[in-house]
Image (cartoon, rainbow, N blue to C red; front, side):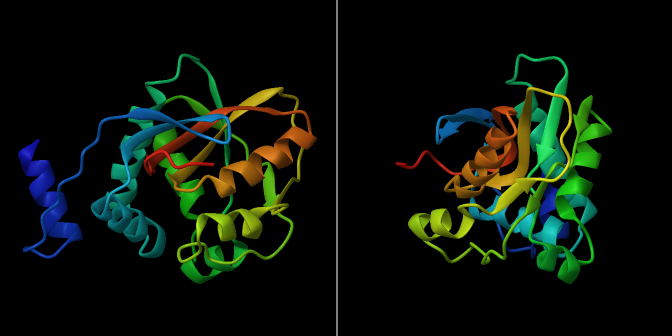
Length: 196
């Protein structure tokens, strides 16, 4: 295992950086929904998310997929239907990839999940990286709608990262309108619990 971390460190970071990722899966909560996370967000994990998302880095994506699989072990349901929370279309165009769909595909190679792309953006939203929690809520309110209805009454949302929970809240609200109960959110990493 030490060789894995050393190799990951040398590939993703310069030789002087110290990769110290704690990967204990945990359950948190945002807006009344359980968040099943593979690890707590850290600066190192944020670098991995960016490498997977912005640079289409396969090793980083596989690491995030393994964190999601760790998070899934916390869930009692055997068959899991997931609904990916979509990125902004502009972000996908700039990247040339749909990061979350590739991440879900990587997870499905190792764990039996069924994914349905049901959500779409209804408005342009700002990049949230520099927004406060309140600004994120305002930014994401009414941001999604269900584009294709499936005959299911419940599913899990899936995303690579959960911070304030504003995106989760907006996706949950859109699914509620179509009477789809969100059982929880599965993510590679989540920040510590924040007040809502």
